[in-house]
Length: 391
Image 1 (cartoon, rainbow, N blue to C red):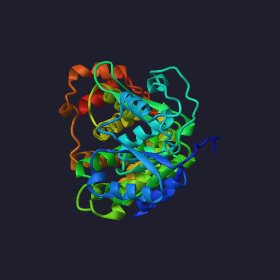
Image 2 (tube, rainbow, N blue to C red):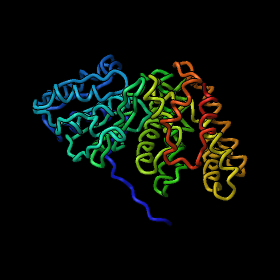
Image 3 (cartoon, one colour):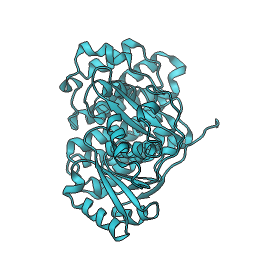
């Protein structure tokens, strides 16, 4: 067995009803909290009021920051300017991946008070000290796995835009509180794109050139949950807490494995596209996963023995996701592609063109796309084939 390392994890509190423990957990980490939330469901459900009351019973004071859409450097800088010096000693983010990423970035930048752009990968050139405020991540969707990663993704959309990470080993949340009940009101389209994002992260990590036995075990357990629960939470099982728990677990471990094994070309595309167009991250990943996997497999089949291990991994994943356990490598890869195509159609994942991406934009996207830890060294022509297939 080759040498490998595995980064730290947050303290994980998982299970239905655990949101009720948040006040006690927060009270053990600070006395003056900044609550970072998404824009909708938390307030409508009454859970925000319940959380505030829980904090007040513990004599905790708080401010509230609402995040609409994917977080930008400007949002983080504004939050830091408005809240620095107010005695805040804890950040609690409750929401989708955008709220969690925003909270993670604010917790990292409040002690510094500097522009976050200076510290973004590929944008700034300053090294963060790693000092941050205690941070609790509470996801309300099952997708990005940001509750278990050490980076916060920030973006600026449009010409010259970017999607980059603020990253440090100290930026893992102190606590990840994962209550599947929080996703019960998640609309089908959001459940679908988030679920496909988690699937993408699990599959890309499983076939990554940096995969390890530990990330394999976690990724496999997450893929099993996707197999069992993805379709259900997007349809008749939307109100089923057990199905929601399965996808919440899948998203959580997808964050763990991506932080340690890395991701592939789908997320290389997502970073590039997210900086140019206002397309939800989960939509980009979900709509490209089938095409990217098809092109990866085709490339690996042409490389002979060098691509055999990755093909075997794709085949094993295909066999498990479909339930067809008795098949060879070629059959398993074909079954995987059929399964991904079926989910893409069943979940009605939109094509990129529906968000304004045109054939004339492909070259600009390719200029910013990296392969990350992809198992196949794809050519520019192969990358173009992936995009063209989902225009």
